[in-house]
Image (cartoon, rainbow, N blue to C red):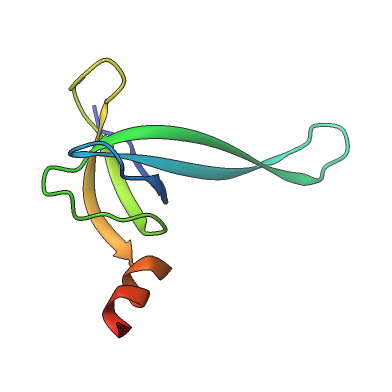
Length: 89
């Protein structure tokens, strides 16, 4: 069975080796046929602590690593604003 891969934005990196990723998806309303957004937060393992808040990342499903962690960071697709501020200083 293939593992699920999701793309989302990092909203927290305060824990050691763990990030919280917010994944948004668009759903069509069954009656009004209008799209609306839903989001869900996933805790993902970041072994090198390289992801920062605002980064767009890809995460993959894995075995349970702790009580809430069941995802692993695959790659950082786009760096967020915080990294750009640090580079200019």
